[in-house]
Length: 294
Image 1 (cartoon, rainbow, N blue to C red):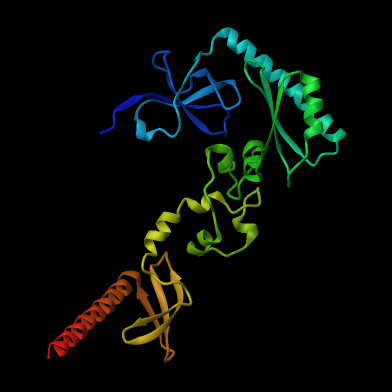
Image 2 (image 1 turned 45 degrees about the horizontal axis):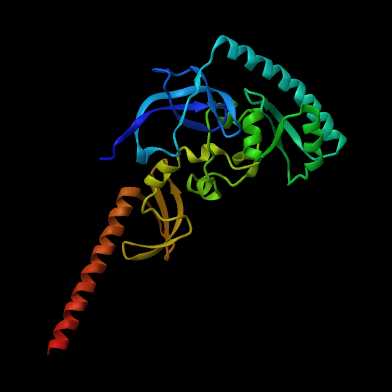
């Protein structure tokens, strides 16, 4: 059994950003506490989202870094000042983007707590040469500049949107990482392949297609796809429809007969066919062995 590594807290620096794991010497923290910790860009303000949790070495996703301290009243003054000045930085950056006629959609500006760096998040349809923009920004703010391009899904995640369901998009509410969604998800769930119906605000396939995928895969286990050819009760049949809600598969035999079969009954029939085939194979192999002995 691996040794317990220590007490771990999950900290977020952005409401829709990645969760990071930290240790703490500040005593017991609780969910909702605000802390100072080193992010990928520098010292930043984060919010405790889970913990304390004891974790083993093999459970850690990355090297565990310490939380610097709990936020103090003075820290809050600095943080609020940084937020106000970040709004001004957004306007300056937007003016410079227009000056250089760059095809960028500026999303957010964020000062690190110690003002060692300012990060500008933007979206774009292709790669952008922003070298001249960075020079102008460095002259304007006299600090390190980080321009971070985000993908279209992350862009919607940051700006927010409504889903087809009428609720706030999942990416803006709780999703922190995106799963790979393909048309196989929609086909497995027997949805019409209509881009307007199965795509989100970002233009990509709906993230919610993954939520019930495991259930569909379980329910359709050993059930052939529509259009497949199968053997059923000694007849070659084509799968006409598969109704996962009624758990009924409709077959059309080579003689034109329509057959409706419950999923469980179909699975039993296919299992019986496999068992009969295996039995025949065993008999055949036994007969061949006897023949060779003779």
